[in-house]
Length: 220
Length: 156
Image (cartoon, rainbow over all chains, first blue to last red; front, side):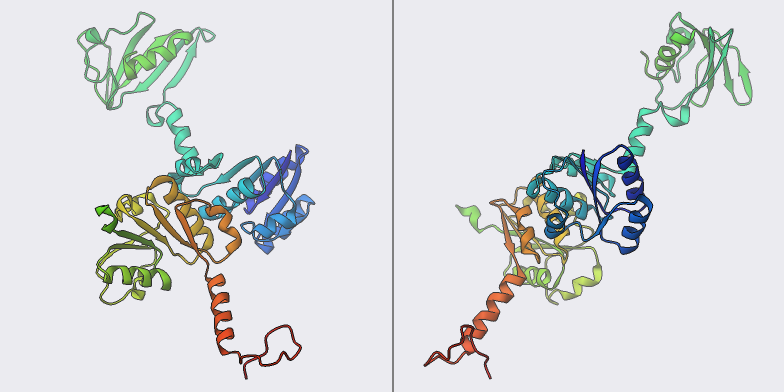
């Protein structure tokens, strides 16, 4: 692939190194003299010391019809200009850039930038993907992983909160063996009510663990 | 076409030009709002400017909304930074329906990134160049005889 890399400091070094190792043809532009020198020394490549948001920089770099531009400039508007110049004027097929303001990610997408990337945005998306980070389940397995013991902290909004076991109707695939309600340890019976803040301990087969947790959280 | 009379102007960037545009519109009784990151820059406004002043970053949609930009009939993008102006113009073009977006651009080559019927561009360098020639033309002596030089002579 023919790739143009614009701006950036340490991240530029990382990007340059990984794409170079993969055998791509790289053209690098950087407007900071120190960084440009360092990038060139560390990677043994030429770095153009130019402002990547100028048309003449693209002309000097001769990057028309490249496959990809990666813009790592500090300011969002500079990244936008780099990507737009690349796509509209120099017909580079795909534009990826960093976005500092996480709120701007969707704006960039709507304005035609293929892949705007924001670190805080990615971070929060990742956390959303993880089962709520604060109620992470702890697991322990017995009998060569044939039985798992799952510990789950009950948070506000969980399906099981404020329900007694009889109404809860836990699936047959697992058993709620114990509730830890600081400082007490309760052995649950049909009329035991689960409360927010409780840590419930369940035993099940590993295959059913996930469905049990989601039952307690969402009721399905 | 009664609506033609209704005008609402949002200026982004209290540069000299931005502040003058906001001041004059406000003086003419046009509903005006000006957005600027650096509150000190509001000093450039006329002392009797009576429009809205919004302190904040124009790249933030919430700040633009605060200026009631959805209702604007004209958006003037007048920060002192070309890339910021280009970004803001595209933002306004994509998300707001103002029929007229006026953008100041120092580097006229970048006007390719502002290619839309709703966008009009002010290029100070081109205007200065034109003015220069107007001044020069006006102050040149009327050539009675061509002295042989192709380029115009100096005004002494």
